[in-house]
Image 1 (tube, rainbow, N blue to C red):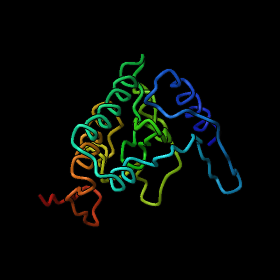
Image 2: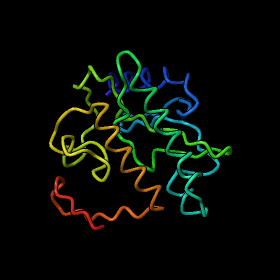
Image 3: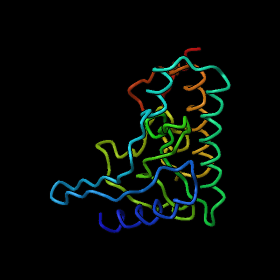
Length: 180
């Protein structure tokens, strides 16, 4: 666990060069309970889901937010080696006081070359948020820049529709029904 924590701290602390990425403040660890929390500032407008539900946004305003997120993702993916965020979703995009979107929660982030990154397993063994994961991730493939882009597309859909994803999840993690 300490090795995984160190890796995540190193990954996130290197990302302070981009304005679309939330600052890394530090971490909290409770080793008795095997819990580790990476810390970033909370932004005044909350996450992007809360923000779009609390404001009557026009299309250009929504586009500006999703543009901020793709710029940050592009920055991550252009690094050498590329960094995959690993968990792009509305809860992991904060909106600051200047109405700019910031990526946060790099708990599943990893270097693209390092597909063997380990993190505490959930009860199912799956890591991430099913709703935003690409099919290959739900089938056990390593995260890649393309899986971030797939998740980003769902984020765009959510922002565009003001939170109406239009999907129903069955008990099988790889079974997703679209309701358009």
